[in-house]
Amino acid sequence: MKLKNQTVFVTGGAGFIGSALVRELLREGCRVVVYDNFVSGDMANLEEVRTQVEIIKGDVCDPNFTARLAAFKPNALFHLAAEPYIPGAFDRPRHFFEVNAVGTLNVMLACVETGIKRVLYYSSSEVYGTAKRIPMDEEHPTCPHSTYAASKLAADRLCYTLHHEQGLPVIIFRQFNVYGPRETHPYVIPELITQLSRGNTVQLGNIEARRDLTYVDDAVHGAVRLMKCDDAVGQVINLGSGSDWSVAELAHALGKFFGRKRIDITIDRARLRPLDVDRLCCDSTKIRQMIGWGPQTSLFAGLKKTIEWHERNGKRWIWETKMGPEEQIWREGKKKGVVTPAGQSDHPASTRTRQSATLG
Image (cartoon, rainbow, N blue to C red; front, side, top):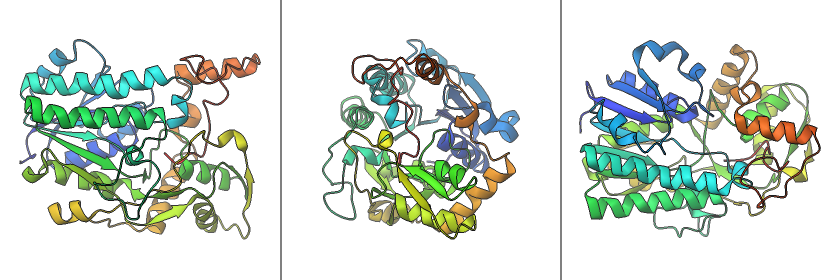
């Protein structure tokens, strides 16, 4: 499938990966429509390209989504819109499932009804749970360790069944962890950059957890090439670097960029997850054979680019300055000393909601 001069619809296009994907699509010569509710995504992520794209504020759970999609007559759709930050699911499981699973069903049925030629659904490596074998290929057993992961797997399987039942021309894209500029949540790399820019002491959770990390520009380049591949339709396809790093190793690697001779790591038990994923390491054989993709940016080169972006942008991340409605509730509850036990409420008043330095 050719994308040049075609209309491409991107749900979640103002987010971290979404905004990088938008730039890649513009380089491809596409007409891009960004659809985002701007809760975690932000217009700042599209700052220098906003005049080159059409931006629509909306929700994937909107019952009128089909009509909104049909108005643009897109040829292809990338579905990234989701509740992505795992700790948030501990206190809002219903909301996460509604957005990530039911919202995806809404989007996919709209794609069937409007006759879109191709869809790429952003699933997640989290659907696998902790690695049972290394590296992890697409046949690795799935065993979600969080409500977030369960909601992503539900959507993943919905896409699969809709492909067979309704003829949905979908690619199920299991992306392993991504890092780079414009991160919208306090995942481990942006959190470490923030802490290490201020001193040599860092507060972390599970420092032995290991993740496969791909620089964001490499990741979206792979996604766009995959969208153009006819043989990918109906397939589950991984994307990752094939190497994994522990949180402790990342802390020491990043410390070198800041000239820290010694890194003091403090374990903050509030950052530990109820059921963590110990290790993720991708087998990218399938995508390599299908489209010849491989990472072009080494971890150290990618970290350097990310730090340089952070410094050019006031040493601030969007998640440090943007207070969405969920964060507002959490902060107000904390100030008042209100602690709601996780699982008893579907709002983020619990102090467990905002756990920084999480892996994904």
